Length: 176
Image (cartoon, rainbow, N blue to C red; front, side):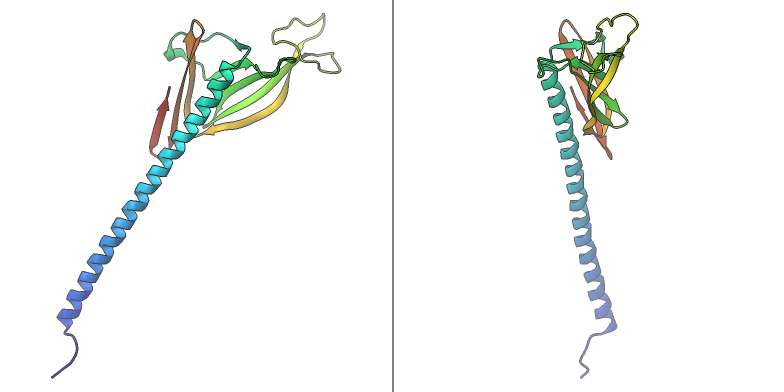
């Protein structure tokens, strides 16, 4: 009596093993893709909320908003400029703007061109004869958020509306 397996038994066993291995691999691959998609969604959601909260908080605390906003969203601005409400004794102006796929925050001040101490003045101050009002960067543009496709500001009667659209890979997230 011969001991061992026939060629047919080996082929059937090998086929069953390959089917089970492919099923396990497909399940693992699917779970990894779902995890990655979930991570992308969480990342852009968190990023969008951080950007919205930071801008909203600083706008609420601002001394005054600079410029006029369109009433309609169709002609919305992609930046906002306001006087910092935290520094009471000086004139610091915060500027949020979209640059490529990022939202950036910059702080600037203004001084008269012939002032050797560069004493900060209100934006729009009228300089003495022969001088100009110069802009000085107090804080370089810093990234506040990334993956931003669109940043919009519009409003009327003291209400500012803000919209933010973020995209990472194939995930798109809108906040208003």
